[in-house]
Length: 341
Image 1 (cartoon, helix red, strand yellow):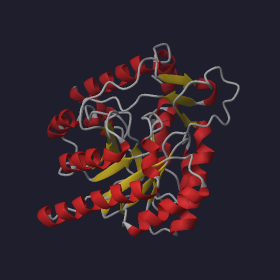
Image 2 (tube, helix red, strand yellow):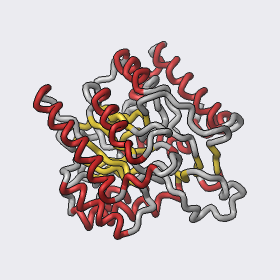
Image 3 (cartoon, one colour):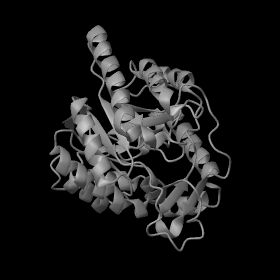
């Protein structure tokens, strides 16, 4: 059955119902070993952050928040999988409805609010998985934790997940947790990263395992804000940057009846803004910190543009919903990209 027909069926359900149905079905197929029938895109391996990625295309955080479907998603051929965002304690997230499709624009608006079952549940799932590839774990703070105390949530999370993670993604850029984006600023950012880097060094010295720290940033930063952040990233020796999270701007969807819905916009309308951040990062960092391009990738050409702008790896999520697994295979087959050729 071609994906365009599957999508029509899924889009008859609410976005969250479709999300649950798709993952449950994929999980069942994996248990029945039916995922072995899927084509296996190979790609070309590459070394980034001291890790060997089988290909440059990853799954962005948010699809599998609780690590329940890692083995099933891995069967699609991703070079790496990122789970989360997960928080210290379980939380339900924001009230329904909180996820909206904009098919005309190949976009989503979400205000999920870090809904997840908590870190202890995630760890139980990670103990069950057979996956041995690159696993990123995306961490955040609980809603009720103040910004002033946020570093303690992140440190607690890091200590919990670091034995299981290939890398840890620090989510300080979701627009759906009040004031979270303040952690991208000045002393708050520097103190948070310094605290987590100290824990990274401690873990390495005691376990002989270096787990890279990656920061996921907003697409809505000004050039001055981005410049200040890059100075801190360099000073604190951050290992990678995910550019970007969703946007609160509504460029390109102004005429949509859903444009007034609160939350982060992803998909095609985010592409230009996200890629612009990658270009700025490349100018400021001059390839000294690897960039993972995320946001608005709906085609192999979009992925190529991210890489041409400075991204070493890319991640997809909304594009997977609109284009299906073929998008992953098309990107992996891209010629002339160095890491993918």
